[in-house]
Every structure is written in structure tokens, then in C-alpha cells.
Amino acid sequence: MRHQILLDVDTGRDDALAIMFAVLHPEIDLQAITCVEGNTSLENVVSNTLKILDLVDAPPVPVALGARRPLVEPPRDASWIHGKHGLGDVDLPPSGRQTEPTHAVELMRRCLCDAPEPLTLVALGPLTNIALLLRMHPEVSGRIKQIVFMGGSATIGNATPVAEFNFWHDPEAAHIVLTSGIPLTMYGWDILWSMRTPADQVAELCASPSQVRRTAGRLLGFEVADPSNGETVIYDCIGDAGTLCALVAPELYGVERRPVQVVLTPGPARGQTIVDRRAMAGEDAVHATAEQHPLVDVVTSAHNNEVLALFFATLGDR
Ligand code: RIB
Ligand code: CA
Image 1 (tube, protein in one colour):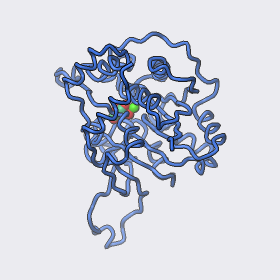
Image 2 (cartoon, protein in one colour):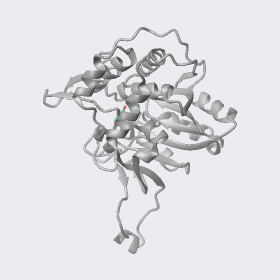
Image 3 (cartoon, protein in one colour):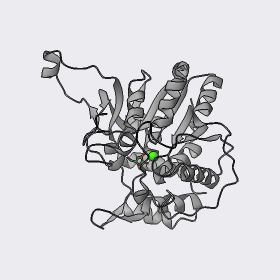
Image 4 (cartoon, helix red, strand yellow):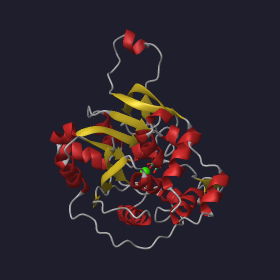
């Protein structure tokens, strides 16, 4: 059965790879795309999204603009690593596609209400749009089959030593989603960053006659200077696209159902994900001080070579 999905993005180099995958994978039925400010400005997110849809010759798909800022804090982008416009140095022609005249939240609500069966939400940016949907239209929760999100981490962070970017950017939104009661799958930073693309494969992609493969290669091979020490950094992972691979090929991943929470308090731990991976009860349970936290299917391991093979095969060679 095909996965009927709504895709929420902050495109972003690896969101771009994810959009390619969502359009080209035969088991994904992409019903709509909603945009959120995150890795880059909302204007860039929308423009990049439409250009990538053109690149892969996507059939018409509704695209709507969503939140311009997190629920509480001001927006803080990641353009240092995604490039000034969010697609590294990839320069694609402007798209003639139009966006929907409605807000992302309304587009999601409409799709959920109109669909004959519950839909899967795949969220690849800060969870602001999804949190707004759940607060403004709680009645649609039952129309959501599951939320599969890139965000959080079972180990280290990237935006801070402990916080992953999407959770750090809007921790309150992450909290609303985590406590929604909807079945959740978390594809965190730790697993995302483990999925590096070998340099020879990036070079091969860049030399491909296929424009899709060449673009993927350039998105993966974009080099930036680390602002802390000037050293070259290459964000050569398929990133958000791996979240969709986990949806269509769960057999390639290890998953643990664990209690998950996000730290909301100000200070150095704000945005941190706490995944309880303990093998036995702790003193918090013994002394009845433990809080209950929602159980989330946390992706904890992957067959990297097979996942990369799936991703690159799906791009095809047109
Ligand atoms: O934390 C990793 C960041 O890169 C997130 O924004 C993720 O969605 C990817 O785009
Ligand atoms: Ca993203």
C-alpha cells in the first residue's frame, strides 16, 4: 500500500533531497507540501521547494506557506551550512508553480479532512506548523495516522552540544507534538549524521549526465567554512531524506520504543531531547519521583549502505 503523506519542510539542502525522494519513490503518494521557516527564510524555503519540484518533474502538488517564526523565540536560521539561499551553490531556474492561497495549517486541515483514510505527516523542519495545526484544529488528530519527524537526538546535538536544530529552533512546538498522543517516529540528529555519503559517490553524482543526480551531488558536496575555526565542513549526508527512507523501508532501521521529552527551560539544555534508554528501573521510579513521558518509536540504528543504495536508486538516472 502506498504511503499517503503530507510533507512539512524547511528546504534546506537535505529537505531538497527528501522532496526528490518523496516525488520519485513509487510507494509515496505526496498529497501536499507545507513550508516552515527554519534552515532558511520562509521565502527561500518556498522558492527552493518549487524549484526542486520542477527539477524532478513532479505532478501538480499543493504547496503552502506556514509559520515565519517559532512559537516563542525569534527565528535563527542555519544558512551558514545550507548556503545563502538554502541550496548550497545550486542555482536552479525560478519556478512557474503557484503556492496555495491558504496558510499551511489550513492546507493540512483540508487534506486531512478530505482524505478517505488517515494521512501520515512527515515533518522535516521545526515543528511549528504541526504544533499550530494540533492547537488550532485538535479535532483532526484522529485523521493523522502517524507523525514521522526529523528532530531531536538520542545522543548529541548539533545546534548546541545537546540540542538538535529542529528541536532547538522551536522546543515548545516539539513538546506539543511529543505530547499529542499521536503515534510518533523520531529520526534524530545522531542517526542522520551517521548517514554520510562517500566522497567518490558524491564525485560520481556530480559527473552524472542526469540533472537530478548532478544536483543531488552538488547539494551533498557543498563545502563551507566552520565559523568556529575556518576548517572546511561538508554536510554530505542525505539527512532529512533518510526520514522518508525509514518510512518506506523500516526493515533497514533499528527502532526502540522509548519515553521522550524535550527540555523547555532556559539555559544550556534548552531544546535537548531526553530519550530514556535505560535497561531497568531507576531511583526515580523507586522513589516515585519519575514523570511519565510519551512513548516514541526512536530510530536508533540503520543499515547505512542499504539506505544509501535505496536513496540513490530512487533518484533514477533521467
Ligand atoms: O538538525 C539537522 C538539520 O538539518 C535539521 O534542520 C534537519 O531537518 C536538516 O535539514
Ligand atoms: Ca530540514
